[in-house]
Image (cartoon, rainbow, N blue to C red; front, side, top):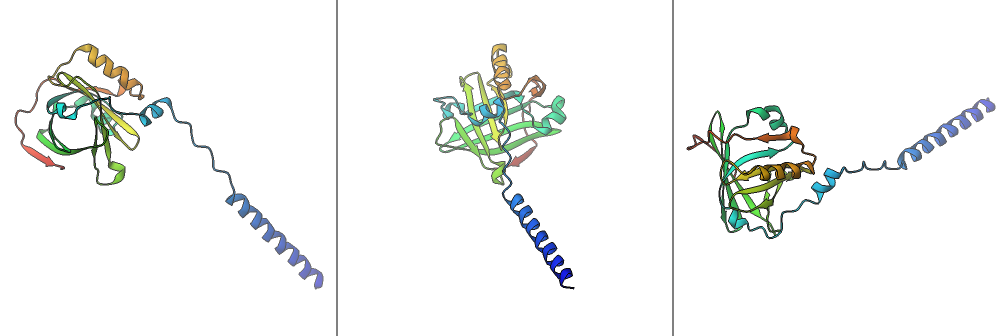
Length: 208
């Protein structure tokens, strides 16, 4: 009988030791290394607006010409994009943006971008922090074209605007080359139509 209890004691002790060892092993398991960032991710991380951008000169009407993005909505309906314009109105620390586009009917979408301490960079507050958007003017001459990038949660969308519905091919080529550095190739570049713009709006979506 004594032998039975001794054996049971040693078995339980051994099991207890094993459980502690497994627990220690699990507790001190080394953290796996983080995956290396791609070159495109590194470029996006360091993204900054062009120097000496004057946001006041961005005021006025812009035609949306080209978009480079992996946005799911665009990927699903990329061949159905509609003519779009955006009118910027700069007042103090705020940039009011009125986007007009066709969604079966002509819609006006109102948003407010806020200035930041960085010239050429704006901020659009989302409903949640994960939906906040940094907006940067990468390049513009104010009178004919502007390349603007929208960055949210580490992902970006690039947009090429023009003061008219057409810009020289060299500007488009430059835009496409810049997009490639963000891993946005020709397969995710969408050309917007240069006709059929809304003259008046029937619906308004106010997101200000």
